Every structure is written in structure tokens, then in C-alpha cells.
Image (cartoon, rainbow, N blue to C red; front, side, top):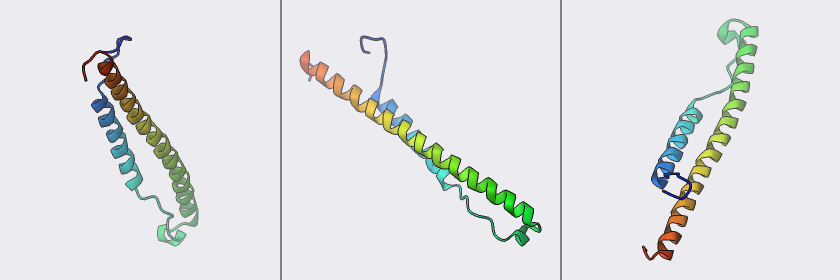
Length: 96
């Protein structure tokens, strides 16, 4: 516990970051690919609409993956900051 009333467990921050990585990895594993010729679906309009939808979805997935990656990196960085701060404070007070 630090002087500000926060109880931070660095391992929990790492666990949260790993959970984000796993969730984003599952999203990334969703295969979004261009749909074959319009005749595959019996209608060129349907083919165009599905292709447009998948293209837009792919862009949103990329953004989600980038933001989630930044969140995971921030959690890991914060974990390291808390660990480093605790180690320095323990050294000052003779604990390590």
C-alpha cells in the first residue's frame, strides 16, 4: 500500500495485460477476407454490401488491436514502475 491509499499488486497488472493480449489475439484470429464473386451469393449487390462491411470491420479491428496493445503496454509499464518504486523504498528503509 502506498501513501495515496492504492493497493497495487504488480502481478495483477501483468495478468490483466496478458488477458488483454489473449482477447485481442482472438479478435485477430477472426478471419476477415474479401468475399468471392457476386455469383457465389446469387446477387452482385449482396456481394458488394458484404465486401464493404468486411472492409469497414477490418479497419475497426485494427484500431481495437492497436488501442488494446497500448493498454497492455501501459499496464506492464505501470507494474514495472510499482516494482521499481517498492524496491527503492525497501532499500531506503533497509528491507532489501
